Length: 117
Image 1 (tube, rainbow, N blue to C red):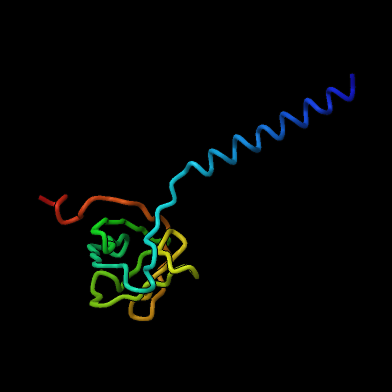
Image 2: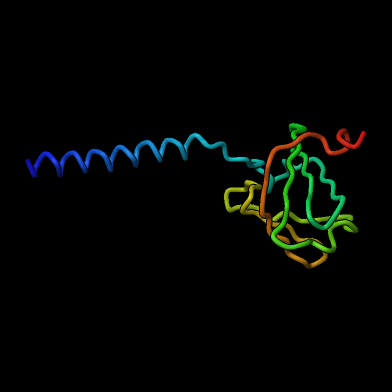
């Protein structure tokens, strides 16, 4: 009886790992691929708290920061610090006037200029 209980418990634990792993794999990861070689078309900042980024396929993304990026609303140029594989995602950051601003969120959104009307 003990042997079957051990196998039953082991099977149940293995099943939980499989189910949990497939749920994590099902989550969509938001990123702009090849951002390090020019896959960013445009960007727009209304405040120091968020930035809108447009990829070359005209898809817009919204990112927020862990702390305000004070130079961002006045910037005429920014530099994206991408992941080693060149993707721009929630683990990336940007440089603006020597200030490094770390992304807190990174999500797909609609055109920010269209939402104002």
